[in-house]
Length: 139
Image (cartoon, rainbow, N blue to C red; front, side, top):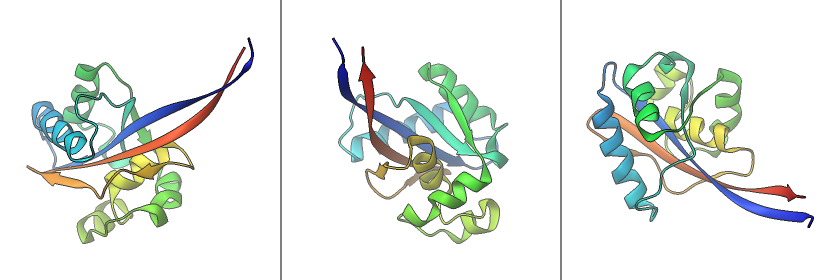
């Protein structure tokens, strides 16, 4: 049987203060998913920017969820920036994008991705949920 199928991809973009524990990141992620109507869902991946690539809490959160952590290159963040919904002076200064978590989620989810809502902020963590629908070929 051949044809196409539409697959939904959920990507959580994460930004945080240095040394934020994985438990805090996971708690904020759970709340962000609840606010977007995705209660109980596990994202397909966590995404962040290059300057957070070595952030232990994000790495550990992805490991605990059993999903990959994607580090989005600066050019991809810049490309996704016009699709973000939030402008943060802190993010502009540190990440060079209006919202690191929103841009990372959008870039990792793909060109057709849309944010489920503006970023969710709590306890030094920012989290944005991007959703895309990807057409895959079935054989």
